[in-house]
Image (cartoon, rainbow, N blue to C red; front, side, top):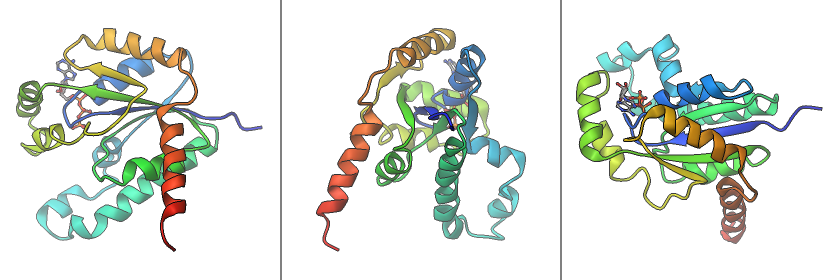
Length: 194
Ligand SMILES: Nc1ncnc2c1ncn2[C@@H]1O[C@H](COP(=O)(O)OP(=O)(O)OP(=O)(O)O)[C@@H](O)[C@H]1O
Protein backbone atom coordinates (compact mmCIF):
# COMPACT_ATOMS: atom_id res chain seq x y z
CA UNK A 1 0.00 0.00 0.00
CA UNK A 2 1.25 3.52 -0.80
CA UNK A 3 2.09 5.51 2.34
CA UNK A 4 0.00 8.69 2.92
CA UNK A 5 2.29 11.46 1.75
CA UNK A 6 3.32 14.23 4.12
CA UNK A 7 3.53 17.76 2.79
CA UNK A 8 5.16 20.67 4.59
CA UNK A 9 4.04 23.82 2.77
CA UNK A 10 6.08 26.98 3.46
CA UNK A 11 4.23 30.13 2.39
CA UNK A 12 5.61 33.65 2.40
CA UNK A 13 6.46 36.64 0.27
CA UNK A 14 9.19 36.62 -2.35
CA UNK A 15 12.56 36.98 -0.51
CA UNK A 16 11.03 36.02 2.84
CA UNK A 17 13.46 33.08 3.02
CA UNK A 18 11.28 30.13 1.96
CA UNK A 19 14.03 28.37 -0.03
CA UNK A 20 16.61 28.99 2.67
CA UNK A 21 14.30 27.57 5.35
CA UNK A 22 13.24 24.63 3.15
CA UNK A 23 16.88 23.67 2.59
CA UNK A 24 17.62 23.85 6.32
CA UNK A 25 14.57 21.75 7.14
CA UNK A 26 15.36 19.21 4.43
CA UNK A 27 18.89 18.85 5.82
CA UNK A 28 17.55 18.04 9.30
CA UNK A 29 14.46 15.89 8.73
CA UNK A 30 14.79 12.23 9.64
CA UNK A 31 13.27 11.12 6.34
CA UNK A 32 13.63 12.34 2.75
CA UNK A 33 11.32 15.11 1.57
CA UNK A 34 11.50 16.37 -2.01
CA UNK A 35 11.99 20.14 -2.02
CA UNK A 36 9.50 21.40 -4.59
CA UNK A 37 9.60 24.97 -5.85
CA UNK A 38 8.77 26.95 -8.95
CA UNK A 39 12.33 28.33 -8.64
CA UNK A 40 13.73 24.92 -9.58
CA UNK A 41 11.64 24.74 -12.74
CA UNK A 42 12.53 28.28 -13.74
CA UNK A 43 16.25 27.93 -12.97
CA UNK A 44 16.62 24.52 -14.61
CA UNK A 45 15.52 25.89 -17.96
CA UNK A 46 12.16 24.10 -18.01
CA UNK A 47 10.49 27.45 -18.66
CA UNK A 48 12.01 29.42 -21.58
CA UNK A 49 12.34 32.52 -19.36
CA UNK A 50 14.53 34.49 -21.73
CA UNK A 51 11.97 34.18 -24.52
CA UNK A 52 9.17 35.32 -22.21
CA UNK A 53 11.37 38.26 -21.11
CA UNK A 54 12.13 39.15 -24.73
CA UNK A 55 8.42 39.11 -25.51
CA UNK A 56 8.47 36.16 -27.95
CA UNK A 57 5.60 34.73 -25.90
CA UNK A 58 3.14 36.32 -23.49
CA UNK A 59 3.37 35.01 -19.91
CA UNK A 60 -0.20 36.21 -19.40
CA UNK A 61 -1.34 33.63 -21.92
CA UNK A 62 0.57 30.73 -20.36
CA UNK A 63 0.56 31.59 -16.65
CA UNK A 64 -2.74 29.93 -15.61
CA UNK A 65 -1.93 26.61 -17.29
CA UNK A 66 1.62 26.65 -15.92
CA UNK A 67 0.43 27.00 -12.32
CA UNK A 68 -2.46 24.60 -12.85
CA UNK A 69 0.09 22.04 -14.06
CA UNK A 70 2.38 22.78 -11.11
CA UNK A 71 -0.46 22.25 -8.63
CA UNK A 72 -1.45 18.99 -10.32
CA UNK A 73 2.16 17.82 -10.25
CA UNK A 74 2.06 18.05 -6.43
CA UNK A 75 -0.85 15.60 -6.42
CA UNK A 76 1.05 13.31 -8.77
CA UNK A 77 4.14 13.22 -6.54
CA UNK A 78 2.15 12.82 -3.35
CA UNK A 79 -0.15 10.13 -4.81
CA UNK A 80 2.92 8.01 -5.45
CA UNK A 81 3.79 8.28 -1.73
CA UNK A 82 6.43 11.03 -1.92
CA UNK A 83 6.72 13.48 0.95
CA UNK A 84 7.14 17.09 -0.13
CA UNK A 85 8.70 20.21 1.23
CA UNK A 86 6.75 22.69 -0.84
CA UNK A 87 7.59 26.38 -1.00
CA UNK A 88 5.10 28.40 -2.90
CA UNK A 89 3.32 31.76 -3.05
CA UNK A 90 -0.47 31.71 -3.25
CA UNK A 91 -0.75 34.45 -5.86
CA UNK A 92 -4.44 34.07 -6.62
CA UNK A 93 -7.25 34.16 -4.03
CA UNK A 94 -8.77 30.87 -5.26
CA UNK A 95 -5.57 28.83 -5.10
CA UNK A 96 -5.70 28.02 -1.41
CA UNK A 97 -9.10 26.31 -1.59
CA UNK A 98 -8.19 24.64 -4.90
CA UNK A 99 -5.04 23.23 -3.29
CA UNK A 100 -6.86 22.26 -0.10
CA UNK A 101 -9.26 20.16 -2.20
CA UNK A 102 -6.54 18.70 -4.42
CA UNK A 103 -4.30 17.83 -1.46
CA UNK A 104 -7.13 16.58 0.73
CA UNK A 105 -5.89 12.93 0.73
CA UNK A 106 -2.50 14.00 2.12
CA UNK A 107 -1.10 15.12 5.46
CA UNK A 108 -0.45 18.84 4.90
CA UNK A 109 1.26 21.11 7.44
CA UNK A 110 0.89 24.76 6.46
CA UNK A 111 3.60 27.19 7.60
CA UNK A 112 3.42 30.99 7.26
CA UNK A 113 6.81 32.67 7.04
CA UNK A 114 6.62 36.38 7.94
CA UNK A 115 9.22 39.00 7.17
CA UNK A 116 9.23 42.75 7.76
CA UNK A 117 8.84 44.91 4.66
CA UNK A 118 12.14 46.79 5.00
CA UNK A 119 14.00 43.49 5.37
CA UNK A 120 12.23 42.05 2.31
CA UNK A 121 13.21 45.06 0.26
CA UNK A 122 16.81 44.90 1.54
CA UNK A 123 17.12 41.21 0.57
CA UNK A 124 15.47 41.73 -2.80
CA UNK A 125 17.82 44.60 -3.62
CA UNK A 126 20.88 42.59 -2.52
CA UNK A 127 20.07 39.42 -4.43
CA UNK A 128 19.20 41.34 -7.64
CA UNK A 129 17.64 38.27 -9.29
CA UNK A 130 13.98 39.16 -8.73
CA UNK A 131 12.00 42.04 -10.24
CA UNK A 132 12.22 44.91 -7.71
CA UNK A 133 8.85 45.39 -6.06
CA UNK A 134 7.78 41.70 -6.06
CA UNK A 135 8.49 41.39 -2.34
CA UNK A 136 6.58 44.57 -1.48
CA UNK A 137 3.61 43.50 -3.65
CA UNK A 138 3.53 40.14 -1.86
CA UNK A 139 3.99 41.69 1.58
CA UNK A 140 0.72 43.56 1.36
CA UNK A 141 -1.42 40.54 0.54
CA UNK A 142 0.36 37.22 1.01
CA UNK A 143 -0.75 36.51 4.59
CA UNK A 144 -4.03 38.39 4.47
CA UNK A 145 -6.84 36.23 5.89
CA UNK A 146 -4.58 33.17 5.88
CA UNK A 147 -4.59 30.62 8.71
CA UNK A 148 -1.57 28.44 9.39
CA UNK A 149 -0.57 25.42 11.44
CA UNK A 150 2.59 27.33 12.37
CA UNK A 151 3.81 30.91 11.89
CA UNK A 152 7.50 31.80 11.84
CA UNK A 153 9.41 35.08 11.67
CA UNK A 154 12.19 35.26 9.14
CA UNK A 155 14.15 37.68 11.35
CA UNK A 156 15.10 34.69 13.54
CA UNK A 157 18.11 32.54 12.71
CA UNK A 158 17.32 30.02 9.97
CA UNK A 159 18.56 27.12 12.10
CA UNK A 160 16.22 28.14 14.95
CA UNK A 161 13.26 28.38 12.59
CA UNK A 162 14.10 24.99 11.06
CA UNK A 163 14.27 23.39 14.51
CA UNK A 164 10.99 25.04 15.55
CA UNK A 165 9.28 23.94 12.34
CA UNK A 166 10.40 20.33 12.73
CA UNK A 167 9.30 20.07 16.35
CA UNK A 168 5.90 21.70 15.62
CA UNK A 169 5.47 19.42 12.61
CA UNK A 170 6.32 16.33 14.70
CA UNK A 171 3.64 17.40 17.22
CA UNK A 172 1.01 18.31 14.57
CA UNK A 173 -2.60 17.46 15.23
CA UNK A 174 -5.68 16.84 13.20
CA UNK A 175 -7.65 18.73 11.98
CA UNK A 176 -4.94 20.66 10.20
CA UNK A 177 -5.63 24.02 8.59
CA UNK A 178 -5.76 22.35 5.17
CA UNK A 179 -8.30 19.77 6.39
CA UNK A 180 -10.50 22.65 7.61
CA UNK A 181 -10.06 24.53 4.34
CA UNK A 182 -10.98 21.45 2.30
CA UNK A 183 -14.18 20.99 4.32
CA UNK A 184 -15.08 24.67 3.88
CA UNK A 185 -14.37 24.50 0.15
CA UNK A 186 -16.61 21.44 -0.25
CA UNK A 187 -19.41 23.19 1.68
CA UNK A 188 -19.03 26.43 -0.30
CA UNK A 189 -19.02 24.64 -3.63
CA UNK A 190 -22.11 22.60 -2.65
CA UNK A 191 -23.95 25.86 -1.88
CA UNK A 192 -23.16 27.39 -5.24
CA UNK A 193 -25.89 27.35 -7.90
CA UNK A 194 -25.21 24.87 -10.68
N1 LIG B 1 16.95 34.60 7.80
C1 LIG B 1 17.58 35.29 6.85
N2 LIG B 1 18.36 36.34 7.19
C2 LIG B 1 18.98 37.06 6.24
N3 LIG B 1 18.91 36.82 4.91
C3 LIG B 1 18.15 35.78 4.53
C4 LIG B 1 17.45 34.96 5.47
N4 LIG B 1 16.76 34.02 4.79
C5 LIG B 1 17.03 34.23 3.48
N5 LIG B 1 17.87 35.27 3.32
C6 LIG B 1 18.39 35.82 2.05
O1 LIG B 1 17.28 36.43 1.38
C7 LIG B 1 17.32 36.13 -0.02
C8 LIG B 1 16.03 35.43 -0.41
O2 LIG B 1 15.99 34.17 0.27
P1 LIG B 1 15.20 32.92 -0.32
O3 LIG B 1 15.62 32.64 -1.72
O4 LIG B 1 15.32 31.82 0.67
O5 LIG B 1 13.73 33.53 -0.32
P2 LIG B 1 12.40 32.99 -1.04
O6 LIG B 1 11.27 33.33 -0.12
O7 LIG B 1 12.55 31.55 -1.41
O8 LIG B 1 12.34 33.90 -2.32
P3 LIG B 1 11.54 33.69 -3.74
O9 LIG B 1 10.12 33.36 -3.41
O10 LIG B 1 11.68 35.01 -4.41
O11 LIG B 1 12.23 32.58 -4.47
C9 LIG B 1 18.56 35.29 -0.25
O12 LIG B 1 19.59 36.12 -0.70
C10 LIG B 1 18.87 34.70 1.12
O13 LIG B 1 20.25 34.47 1.30
